[in-house]
Structure formats: C-alpha cells, structure tokens
View 1 (tube, rainbow, N blue to C red):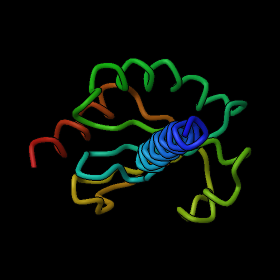
View 2 (cartoon, rainbow, N blue to C red):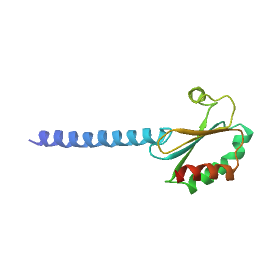
View 3 (cartoon, rainbow, N blue to C red):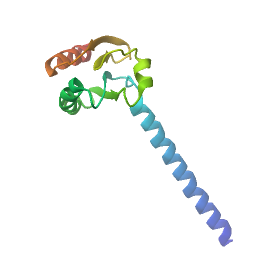
View 4 (cartoon, helix red, strand yellow):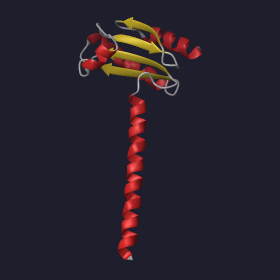
Length: 128
C-alpha cells in the first residue's frame, strides 16, 4: 500500500517537472524566434568586436529597455553564429533589419545607425 502511494507521488512529481520543462522550452523558443511573434522587431546583426557595433551597443540597450513590450530589439553576433549571417544575407556588419508586427521585413540599414534614426524607424512601424 505504501509503495503504491510512493509510486503515485513520484509519478506526479515527475509529470509536473516534465510539464514545467516543456513550458520553459516553449517560452525560450518563442524568445529566440526572429522576428518576434506579433511584435515590431529590430535585428542588429554585428559582432562584439566590431567598432561600430560596440558604439551601437549602449544605444540598443537603452532602446530595448524603453521599447520593452512594444518592440523587440535583438542583437545577433554573426562572428559567433555565422549561419545567421547567411540566413539574413549579411555581407557587411553592422546591418539592421526592421520587421513589422506581421513579421514582414520592412527595411534594412547597413553601418552604424544612430539612436534618432532607430527611434524613427521603430515609431513608424509601431504606428502602422
């Protein structure tokens, strides 16, 4: 009798753990999805060691905080993940790609992009 109770308890705990892991995995996959589902998305493809990319890093961090919940701002290091450069057809870094809420690519910019230009693009996409 005690063994049956123990087996049921262990089974219940294992089932709960599996369900939680599946939930976390699904959430992580959604966060890694580019462009983000139902959200304006800016993807900055660059590298940690690229000078213009380093100059843009604090701008992106600031805008990521300010646009949190409205627009996703994603940095992809194409030197660490070269397949992503191929996936997006990147030849020069940094390159910024802007997607609307439907996930359609709206525009690209190559090179350093200042805060005002990024804001203008994001605000235009959010207004659509």
